[in-house]
Amino acid sequence: MNKNPQRQHLEDLTLDEPIECGSFRVTEREIVDFAMLYDPQPFHLSLEAAKESIFGGLVASSTQSLAISCGLVVRALAHVAIMGGAAWEDIKLFRPVWPDRDYAVRVRWSKTRPSASKPDRGIANLTIEVWEGDDLVMTYGVAYFVRRRP
Figure 1 (cartoon, one colour):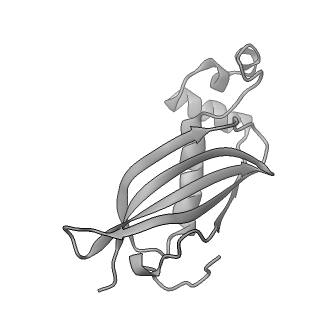
Figure 2 (cartoon, rainbow, N blue to C red; figure 1 turned 180 degrees about the vertical axis):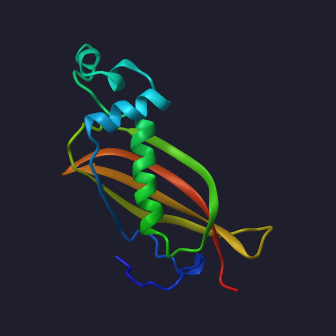
């Protein structure tokens, strides 16, 4: 894991090197509060309704799980000269996110390329994984515009 605090540009990114971004845990209350605002499906809103769902219990919204993991990624990559997002890619959900369990977020740069039309930037693709212990919970990609060295 690169712990260099200096600003990293497109040319500095190391492909396929795992970067640990931290971990998260959500409570039942956080799941319900988020669902009430953004994803009001029964299996996110109440334990009783969730027991009747395919999950058999209260689970976090995938949107909430993406948002939390994305926040960890952005903080972990604060030293990278990211200019903005270009795309979300290939979101896959393998397991639900349950309350009061620990989930780790790990990323790696999977591809970089300079922009053909804007010489000050390039596109860097990031693969993001969310794990519960040894179980892969979710994967997705983000393509970022990253500043090139002056």
